[in-house]
Image (cartoon, rainbow, N blue to C red):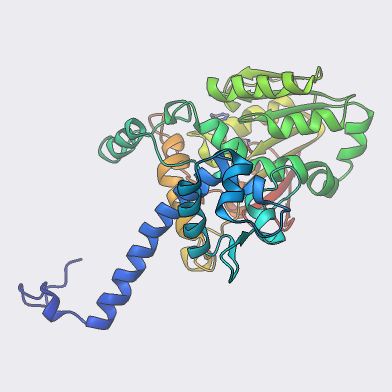
Length: 367
Ligand SMILES: C[S@@+](CC[C@H](N)C(=O)[O-])C[C@H]1O[C@@H](n2cnc3c(N)ncnc32)[C@H](O)[C@@H]1O
């Protein structure tokens, strides 16, 4: 609402609180800095700068340039910027080094649950950005397919560390009786499987189990098929289809929906299909973004604005990509709504697991 108590000329800087103006201007510029630093993290990841520096002692810019085969002048500027951002350590003698913690977050994709550099994609395709803006005018969002060919790969790298490193050690053991069934040989379906990292991990860990992944995005399914082919897995296949179209076989022991129900235009239809697919003693494991349904409570999350950004740019787009879509968005599947959704679909048991995943909660759902 405009403040009608102020005179119309109160928009000049003279009429403003100088300190508040400076503080607010600084806040806005920190987000612009974040955009630039994000781009630098993407370059560091893409050019293997972090991976090259990890585990090394102090290095000069010439050392980093020769180890990576890159041009020293660009490497030096990048290093100085990284030090300015507090992302790598600069010693008094002008050398640079990644601390073990910095290496865990920026370099160690294979072993670190904290690896984050893969989430930095280097910006948004201008054509996708135009369509994103257009969605504000039409109310019709972009499906993951329309979000560009790199969306699936980018997401797979963002969610990959938890999918690969925590699935068999933390997540599945938290469920009642599931790992025993998987070891003996079970049927698993991953709905909204994306690039297939989760299902490939499960299939590799439980060779007697057969797995099918479903996703409506052809880019995601192509990537998933490449992932399992590279790993030589024969107990997993992928089908390009939405969650609402999975077969009503009634014999699936474990259904996964990881970070995808809130992206679906009609998660209720997927829930109904899952009820018809799952065995009466089966388990449905939902992983979804930590939220409470209450903005004030969610505001305790210092990264909340990033999640709303993910929503407007991606999740809400997908959830509004069909006419009448429910449009839950990134923060829309909080525990209460998740329980309602599963109850309406015919499930009677719902348990929340907090597995110390900073971004997600896990819901164990049974008939
Ligand atoms: C954020 S990604 C998560 C992918 C993967 N599960 C993971 O954890 O990395 C959301 C996925 O939901 C998929 N999706 C969107 N609408 C869907 C629907 N109706 N049925 C199944 N999956 C859907 C998208 O194509 C996308 O791959």
